[in-house]
Length: 256
Image (cartoon, rainbow, N blue to C red):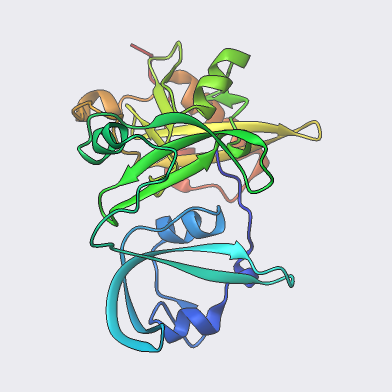
C-alpha cells in the first residue's frame, strides 16, 4: 500500500513543462499517473519532449517517470526510458532473470546487501515495457491493516510485503506489485485499503486494478464487489462528505 508521499506543490513543474507534461502550471497527465507520482511510484509510459542526456538532445521519447527527494527539501524527476537490453542485478542468477523476463514468474524474493553492507530482503520484478528490473525493499513496503474492512493477519501482511497472494473471506485476492502503476493487483476491479495511523484510519480507494499474475480477467467476477467493500465506502463517505456521488449511490451486494 502506497500512501501519498508528496504533495502537488512538491512537483517540479518547470521540469514537467519542459518535457511537455505541464503547461502554464497545469499538469497534462491523467489522474492515475498523478497518483502514482505522488505515491512514490512510476507512471505508465508517457511521451516526453525536449530531453537532454549526456550532452545529447532528444526531441521526443517514450518513458516512465517518478519522483525522489533531492536532499534540499525539493523533489527531482527521474526518467525511466525503454532500454534496449535489461541490466541484470548482480544478485540474480541468469536463469532467474530469464524467468522474470519471460513472464514465467511474477517476482522473486532475494537477499542482498545494501551500500553499508547490511543484509536486506528485496522483491524483484521485471517491467517488459521499459525492459528493466524493478527492485523493492520489502521492509519499506507498507502493508494495509484492512482490506474492504477486513483485518489482515500478521501472516497476510508479511505475504503482501513479499509480493505473495493475499486472499480474503469476501473472495478478494490481491498482491503488491512495484511495477504496476497502481501498486496493487487484484481479481477485483476495485478495493479499499486502510491503515491505522495515530489511532485514526486512513483509506485508499483503488479502482481499475489489473488482474493477478497468470490469471485471465473474469469481468463479471471482477465487477462483483463485496458487502465489506460497500460498507467501507459508507465509512469513507462519513469522513469525506465530498466523496464521489457514484459511490454514495452504490448499494451493497452479497459476497459470493
